[in-house]
Image (cartoon, rainbow, N blue to C red; front, side):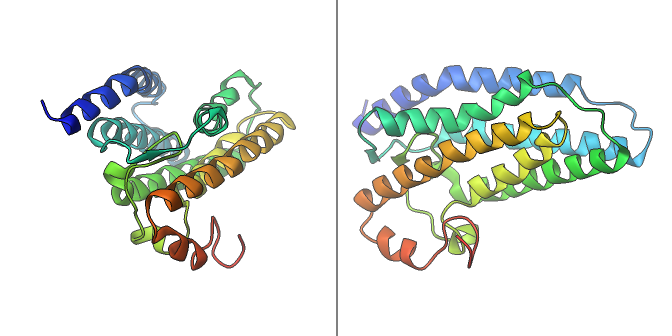
Length: 216
């Protein structure tokens, strides 16, 4: 057995609990589908849920097929930021839900649908370089990465903004603030390890925005 195969097996073993957890999450979302749809709003709700499940399936597949890391960020802070950034959105399940008007329900599901669709598009480009912790598994500069260094986080923020509309204020805003506080250093840790692993990354970072072209 080659060293590369051993590394892939070890990486998959570490990812296995997360893959199982994501599979359970999909089964829960599947159970919430309203069938048959009875209105345009229900179609939108179901469509957003299906795309969310599809994006989760993409994560499961990428966790299985991704290449081993070439370099990892050292220390506890990058690992904590990576795990917190991935898990923090789960805090929404503990928040009290709001009674939504049809307009707010439509806006919520439109945002979650758009965020999921954008994430799936980004996953197509990220491919085997996908990672949750700050690690260098590959350098991707094509597709959406031509314009921003973290298009996946941008897609996640759009998705979370839609989810936030479903809950009573001001708790969603506080949760989103917490997510932002965690994700920003997570991006910095990722950029640091990528610049250490790939000399071309610094030039790439200098000519692209972090999240929003021309803004940040």
